[in-house]
Image (cartoon, rainbow, N blue to C red; front, top):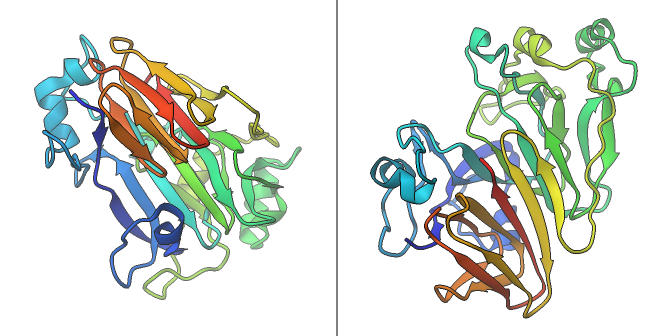
Length: 314
């Protein structure tokens, strides 16, 4: 079985634009404001299809139902959804302030938990993120700030640069400011509670729905002033949580990464540059996201200065 690349699913968002054309060389649907490219998804109603090779046209669901052991490893359940969802986010405007429900309360709210990691692939000068609360802000203070349309006074906003990364766990309030191109690696969930939307109108010209009651039940009010993982040279662990592990590799031309078969499925993300898989001769290009099945080994060699992320242990 080969490394698997999937056709992207493009999602229109009020805060999006056309940036993926220039930044990742994508061909976008005409006349659409595209905020998200879903690179790999296994959900009812949204299914990734293999883009090329012997399995072209097969959905990720079809592959898992037919070959779960080959893809995920012995004993893995092919009827369960693939556990990771990968997105590119082109944030031309600020996203809403939002939260995902923790696992212990998500079922009661009719939702799913979602822990996600943001990797800043590119950003404009002065770009920032909003993550967590300012130190000492209480639930009562935040609730009053929402009523007074002053939520921004309670949340932590900090500047970022390309290469920064932050883990956004379920219960952690967050928003992305304009000017960020982000690779989002997350649990397979699509439950988002919108806390505050900065007075913005949606694509239909009406205010977007808020989920205040669900949000206040979901927010971790002890989550004060989290810090991103700062870019460092060489190999670096960006996230290591119960849902997944993400490692970063900075490669110069000729450098290699060995990813043996039989150690579990992996996801390979090419943030910039290009590598060639010496095992198959396949070129892995900037912006590409690839599923490495359990039975498949990969030997990646950089053709140019390249940043590679590898997600595993999911």
